Image (cartoon, rainbow, N blue to C red; front, side):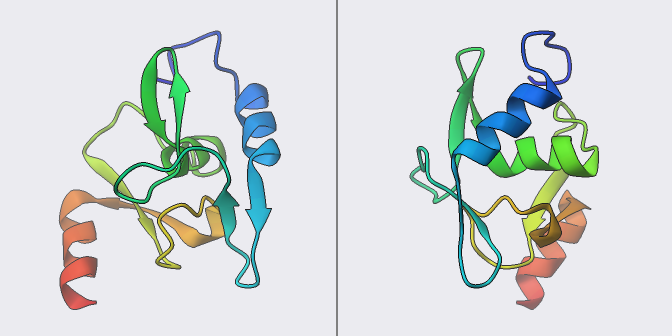
Length: 102
């Protein structure tokens, strides 16, 4: 998705995220671009829809974007937030546990 593309560089992603960001009173970086039917910020990368919070996790938290065994949890509860301080990389099992206990 992102990691293997020379076209998609960290610099380009950072520029895109800065351009489409609105900061709210909680410190959330709200995506102002397209929002999926599930409430996540999305954009197109090489003709594929990519969730913006996963791009932010790749950029700021060193998430391997092709590792689908890991989820990105929004600690703020806002699905279209991509502030890396509000994101946590978890295994699927850990993520499920977080949602069950909430």
